[in-house]
Image 1: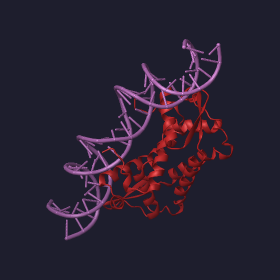
Image 2 (image 1 turned 45 degrees about the vertical axis):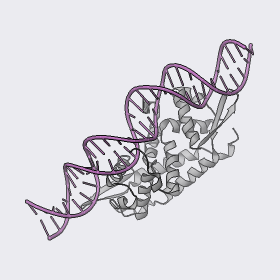
Image 3 (image 1 turned 60 degrees about the vertical axis):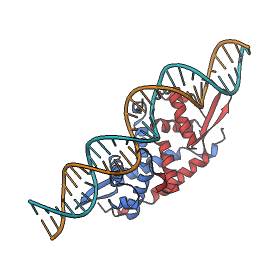
Image 4 (image 1 turned 180 degrees about the vertical axis):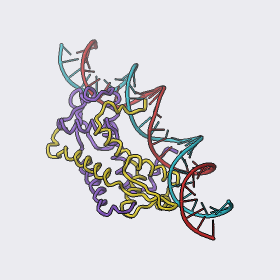
Length: 110
Length: 110
DNA sequence: ACAATTAATCGTAATATTGCGATTGACATG
DNA sequence: CATGTCAATCGCAATATTACGATTAATTGT
């Protein structure tokens, strides 16, 4: 019925899925890459940088922000976005742990 | 209009987004975790393990397979699924590279 | 050949996502 | 206070995702 059964899964699984979903769009990956490379936080430049409408960029930023991966602070007329270090570090750790569970050596099954 | 503008982004960005989208569901994370921990490939056990219908599990497996993250081989009546080592390693590498671009030290912007 | 088992596929309903034009709200400056 | 700028929000259309019952296809054992 189109709704994910979150009750079935662990908090870790749900959390990781939410974070990955936030990352799982080329525009949002591009936004994060730009924020990271510019270090200093950017906002409306993204509209020029990527070829998407202002409303669309704003929506993607909202999703990244609601996932907690970025934070925005008012800077005069515009808004300055940057990485939220804690959430970023947590995600990196969780992903590293996830990939570490697989050792490609004993892949002699199928 | 509900369709991602892939032409705008790089191949790397699009590829990473597709892989992350395949991971971005708690059921698929649970499936991968089970496949990894059982090492020996499993198929219909997932229906019992998670509390989802057979059709639903099959659909999730199809998505993971079409993303190239797992592979399935016929084993009698059932089908044996396991990690596709190359795609897995590639994704891990790409993600590591992505996270490495951010050094939380100079996070003195916002 | 026949029944049983396993998993893919079809069809459908409910909901979510993507993208954008248009509007609105907040703030700075003349 | 009027005006301009920036970004959030609203409303909409097109499409994608999630979940499942029912059916189908393939294979094994009798």
